[in-house]
Image (cartoon, rainbow, N blue to C red; front, side, top):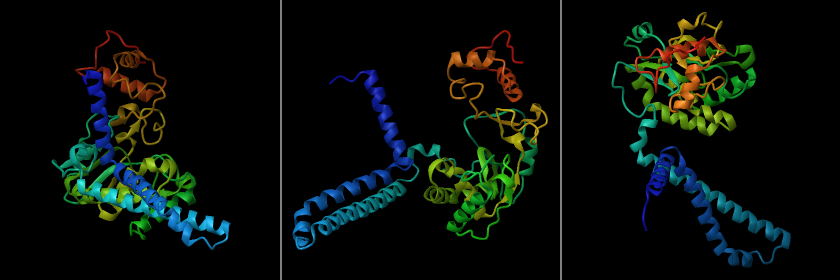
Length: 333
């Protein structure tokens, strides 16, 4: 059978997806499914025996007993398979795709900055680097905008206390407020940073790094629905609380979204922005404007309503090696 380029590319994508799935939690799920199927097949083989030993029971009771045994066996099989899959995943370690794990490797510098791919350095951050030049384990970041669990203050506080209790951090206080939502609206939190920009000194990173995976898994088991999206940030918050590192709370200058929502909330002028987090799609497609020439042309020639986006546009077009092309004139507003 001939293998053309399209087939080879499809095969490569499939292999990558399988390996990535193994590294991001697929094995416990696959193990659970296989365990449930194996248990069901075994119990179906035992069905004649089950029918014989329950022959003297009332028909309805007999049916309920047999179904209960079948369902119970499937549940037990799923649990055992999931445990087996988790054990295999833990044994494999971080592996070839460990670069996807922000805490996979030891610090290789005196300051470690973790940021999302949709973040852009807008100006120098020397003042922050000086503050991180300390022997005390220290982390710096902007508190997340809103609660990851509930917008209601009481429910938010209850959810955080429940997760802290599960992490054996029962007495850890909720000392911080969210960067947009007020305590009256959404309650309080431990040091819970938005992942767009988080900075450590070497001592802080090395103290937190061994704990993150454990607490991320704890968060994943405690969360449901949309909150699962924030398991990484919550896991880091629990790890910071457990490690007892010094917390340096930053303003929105170090993690400003590409909208005007932080103007008047710690930023008076767009020139104060040091790190811009272009996580909003309201005025341009953040996923394609750096990878598609047509999308970049639309970005470079647009007149944005948001002052933050106009500032970001000017910054991008002023870079020495601007992407794709440098338009002779740009109506950047």
